[in-house]
Structure formats: structure tokens, C-alpha cells
Image 1 (cartoon, helix red, strand yellow):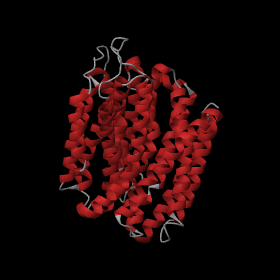
Image 2 (tube, helix red, strand yellow):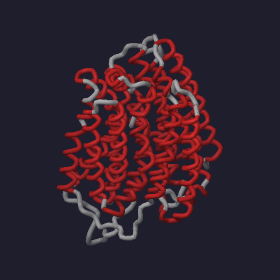
Image 3 (tube, helix red, strand yellow):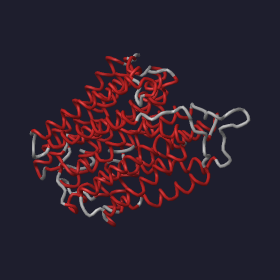
Image 4 (cartoon, helix red, strand yellow):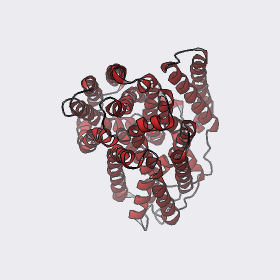
Length: 478
């Protein structure tokens, strides 16, 4: 799933984190730092690991499948192995930083990500590759919220705003070059290089973090919702595995049905655990008393789920059916992050005048039109089939991304802005998690059957995007 569309959600986390001055900061101990550029570079290096790796793997799936003899179900788990822990543990990673120190958890997350990347690069089998991807997701869940929160603890005033802006711009650029870089590496040196490239980035981030980041005062009263995180992770895993098996060649049988049922029961148990945890919950259920917050997250789940599905299967179709090189397939996705990066700030200002409801309704409708255009992909020219679809989808996402960020932060009180934005980012990734699980049959198809399956998936994505627009219109306050 491309990292670029998640920039809006992750900018929300950064903004929320930046709003919080560390507990020990006073007039005599300001949040400022003696090495602002190095601190900013450290957070960018750390977060770029998750941003780039979240997008480069998509273009490498065909090569990975051929190299490791992996079928569609296994290929979907190479994506979902990363998304699952990232979706389930993102909030816990932020809480761990508050409890044990953000620098410490950042370094731990980057170190785990690096070790997992080495395992992925050297994996002799698909099973070990999936294991490495799961470990990468855990590392990303630790490093992501803490790399962003550090911007708020090391900068203050206007410098804080500039730091967040630079981080957001570089993140968008990382999302843009990720598929292109990944495709080039796959073509030139093979798919294993897309994991080896993480190692020098991680080493630099760890060195700079240990050398230049402050060792912050720890929040003595903070607690970790371990039971909630474990239940959510196992429940999401069971649901994802069951859906993957049910949509692959095996179809729905007692094992996949049992996994889906167990996943649903565990997610209901997770809600019960969070209710009992009260203020110490990973996800305070009181947030859902806001109809706007509930509607925003349902809309996010549907919209980003549809987008994640397309960004997974489109490079696969271009490579397997239209015989694109991996580099060309990565370049085909470039209009999406570029248009979003260029237009989001303008749409954010416009949404401030119009309110969030109209753009959050219109954006998904435009995205749905782009999905309909993508049904023309297959066998034709890139300029007349793929490019128009990508441009329309990009315009629709640009209309929605910035207002979504603002609306999420406005839907709850200031004291819950961090967890609200973090949860919305996790929901966006969970949408991609579930749609990827439903695409095993597409990734297993070949020839004309692959193209037919892609067109069905594109139609389903269009319907899902329209459903997200209906959610925005019905539940989001004007």
C-alpha cells in the first residue's frame, strides 16, 4: 500500500504531538534544541523507513512470487504481514514512548526494523519473508508515532510548525519516489535489494538519535494496554487469515470460517477490554460518542481500503498482463503522490472556508470516478488508460486528505487529539489490511482472468468509495 495517501493521517499525528510540550518543559527549560537540523533529519530518516517500505514492496510482488514460488494468498500476506501489526500496535507504540522515553522506543523500533529487513532480504522461503514483514510492522509501529512526537518535544513555536511542514513535505516525497526506487532496484539488482536499502538508513537514524536526541523525562503514571493490544492483534490476524483463505482458491471452509468467527469474537472482546480499562485504554471508547469521529473513521476505512486495493493490484496487473518493467510500473503510480503533495495545502485552506463535509463527500466521489476509469486499463496505452485514472483518483484524494486531517482533530477535545489522529491513521492502514486479504484470488490469476478480476476489483473499489462519501455526508458535521 502506497505511503503517500497516509500523509494526511500521519500529519495529524505530528500536529497532535507538536501541540504537547514535554512534562519537564518550562520557561527555563524550553523545548528548543541545539541541533535542530540534525534532530529533524533524524526523525525524517526514521519515518522514511516506514514510508518507503510501505510502498516499494508492491512493485516487487511479481518478482518475489516467481523467486519464492508464492501463490496469491502468500503474496497478500507479504503485504498484510506488515500492515497487521502496524494497524494494531500504532497507538501502543505511542504510549510506550510516553512511558519509557521516546528516544529509547524510537531506537528500539528502528533497530527491530533493521533486523527484520535483513531477515526479509535473506529469506530463503516465503514463510520467513512473511515473518520478517511482521517484525517490520512491529518496528514501524514503535518508530512512527515516536519519530513524529519528537518534533513536538524538541521544537517550539514557529520552529515547531516549520519542522512539521518539512517532515510532511519529505514524507510526501518519500511516498512519491518509493515505488519508482523499488521498481528500479528490482529491475537492476533483484527484489532482495529493496530490503537491504533499509540497513544504512536505519544505521544512520540510530547513530543520530543516540547522539543528538534528548533523553526525555518519562511519564511515571503512564500505563500500557497490553491486553487490549494483544487482543486487537490476534483478532485482526484471525480475520485477515480467514478472509485471505476464503478468497483464494481454497474458498470458504470450516478453518477459514472458524478464523473469521474467532476474529469477530476477539474484536468484540477488545471493545470490552477497552471499556473496562477506562482512561488507561489504548482506545478510549468515549471518543465514539462523537458522531463525527465515528463517521470520519468509517469513511477513512472505506476510502483507504479501496485505494489500498487498487495500489496493490495495479502494479501487479501492469507487470503481469501489460508486461511493464518493475521500474515502469512504479513510475505509473507517480501522479498520485505528486498531485496530493501539490494540492493538499490548497484544499486544506479551501476546506477551512467551506467546512469539512463538502470536500469529504466530493473527494471520494471523484475517487470513485477514477476507479471506474481504471476499468479501461489492460492492453492499451498508458497515456490513455492508466494516466487518466491515476490523475482523477489523485485529484479526489487531494480534495479529501487535508480536510480529513482537520476534521479528525476537530471531532474530539484537545486532550484526545493525539489518540484520535493516531487511531485514524491505524484505521486507514486497517482498511488496506482487509482489502488486501480479499485480493488473494486476483493475485493468483493470470492472463485474461487476471484482467477480468482486476476490473471487478476496480468496480468494487468504486462502490466502496461512494459508500465512504455517503458516510461523510450523513455523519460529518458541516
